[in-house]
Image (cartoon, rainbow, N blue to C red):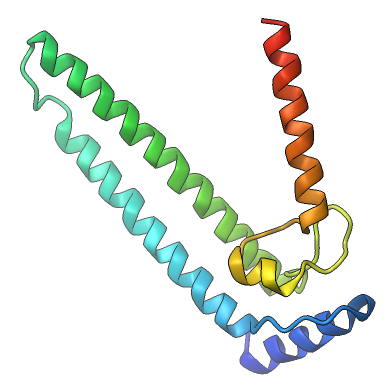
Length: 146
């Protein structure tokens, strides 16, 4: 998206619902693209490290336990990086489509301070709070049924 289009989009979002939006979408784009590149590098390093480690341990029990712990850590790190990459890609898609900065739940503008703190945010604070409370309630119900 060209800089002029991003400026126009910023202005349009600022006018939505009378809410002021002072997020520089060009800076957001640059940040998100940089974050995307960083996450790809991180995923490549994790994959290289994991493939390098396969078969590099002896058969003694301590090494098997160490290998298991290290593998679990690598899997969790890989999942976290993949999740973050999906969030960044989604934010970039919304930016290019013109819906960046609007809550995906209530369609209200997300406050600029929230977008500056979490550029890939897709929910306003109220909707995010509701989502988290709902998740906590679901977790409680699940734990009661176990």
